[in-house]
Image (cartoon, rainbow, N blue to C red):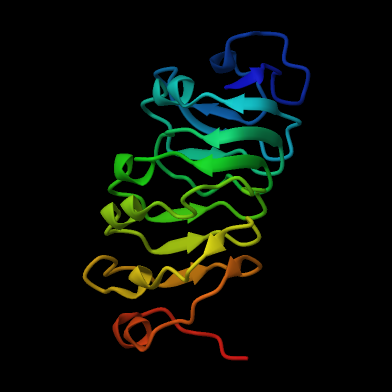
Length: 184
């Protein structure tokens, strides 16, 4: 999963996560990995999406509060545990690979080299209910397309605080959106 492969904390003696000795790795009765929860697990290096894509039964992934870095690769579903790492950018086509995505949380990442701050292909996720990218050093105009009820009919929560957004929220955003706006 990471370039410097460390087993999750707990001193697992087996290289087989389904042997029941890897802390934070859950598997089903068929020996397939269903969840990885290694929040604060001391992971370092690069996240290899190809490794994770082989986990076809994975339904939960929490890699938050580690030292993972580089561009955010294509990952399997359920992307709500990626906060507090050092991902540099969201790769082109990232969101298009997850049309059923409902929740995306990438808070507290240092994406200072991001070329396209939120790729427009996020509009290929009509089931999106919650998008959170707080304190990720995004810079650019406010993404008013999130207020388009045709593109995002289910979106209820949009959190973009502590970023460098320089355009105003348009009246169309408020008119078309189910997202409550906090006022100063």
